[in-house]
Length: 230
Image (cartoon, rainbow, N blue to C red; front, side, top):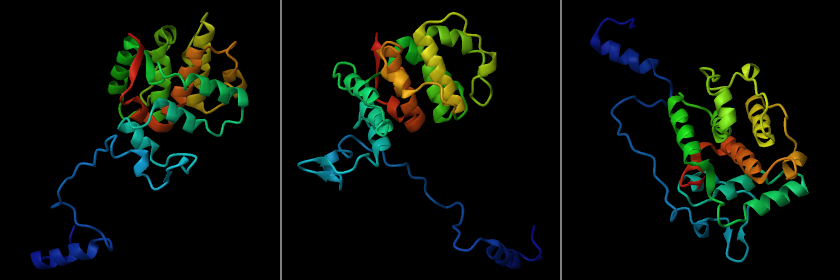
């Protein structure tokens, strides 16, 4: 709406209505964000890299970018997320699992896990990182997925009160507790429980810590990964 009544004065009024230091809409050129490569993210090119001791920082400031282009591993991300966890037994178990060179990059249980996760992710409208972490855990376990797949609300959360677990395995129950903690923020599993392989198996441990990592870094850690079993 203009208060002036001539084209010339309308133009002047439009200029006066603009916010100071604002930019004019339209007329610009759309440019794609630069796609980083592994070569770009070589740690030796970083200002914080030291020839003798490697990185001078405790946590890489561009880890999310390095994950996206495959320059960092899932193990790097998991260790970064749990670097401040004050439990010696937990840290020992974490190191043992992510020092295995044979399957350190494998995040999905099998092809079915990956296919269901990707299909459900695409069906959601802008899912958040925690929603993806919950979806990752539920689709990893067949029993949990059957009991919860119809209970997702429009905002991407699971209707926890409507879930009836029944008789499930120890691993399934551990994953379910992790799901509840990720969604509600209420403590369900302690570091002591995660550190005890008599309570939580290596497989469930891996799934839980990787889900927490997804809640931190999102889909960046899913790039350039493989399934665990074909």
